[in-house]
Amino acid sequence: AEIVIVPDRAAAGALVADEIAALIARKRDAVLGLATGSTPLPVYEALRSRLAGVDVSQVRGFALDEYVGLDPAHPESYRSVIHREVVDPLGLDPARIRVPDGTLDGIEHHGEIYEAAILEAGGVDLQILGIGTDGHIGFNEPGSSFGSRTRVKTLTQQTREDNARFFDSIDDVPMHCITQGLGTILEARHLVLLAFGEGKAEAVAGALEGPLTASLPGSAIQLHPHVTVVIDEQAASRLA
Ligand code: F6R
Image (cartoon, rainbow, N blue to C red):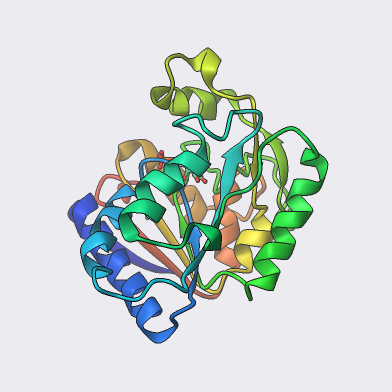
């Protein structure tokens, strides 16, 4: 992987936004893999100026994951977050941006349907990734198989605690999610992993330098030929 250590989040956002703008300039119908959570926000922020005046009408996007059983209209559903932070401010076509369907009705088919939609779009050109303190990417929690596809998973207690900040209380954080699998993520043509802060240092070191192990799902990125890692000094502090 190419590892870039940046002074702060804004610098990371600028760097990755430049990369995405260049991609869209050479491929008008680029397919973006969109992460949620706090980490990618500086990227989406920086993209506002980079894409002002650019024709983004053909850009497509696929979110990594969604909570299961949360009303899609809830402000913290990933559908809501992607629309609020990405689709609306960047002026993307909502019909071209998909988020896994976490509604319970027919949930057993939603993974397959999502995989088919990604394939039909020609695959993801650039996948933005954050990493959980427990080493998850997407919501592939420890124990996820490297070949896994989009499916329902149970969130770990750690992840529910980490994400409680988005909800009134931890009891409101859903127990389950639907997430692209590690196998799905590895098929994107370019992975861009971002991480900030001391709390991510261990997960980053494990993902980049540890053994390939399902106990640290982020280590799967070592199998990918084109990975860019953009991290601050704190997140880089446990690297050899
Ligand atoms: C979000 C996702 C997760 C987050 C991870 C880090 O779509 O797939 O893997 O990237 O939980 O979350 P933050 O960025 O909030 O620290």
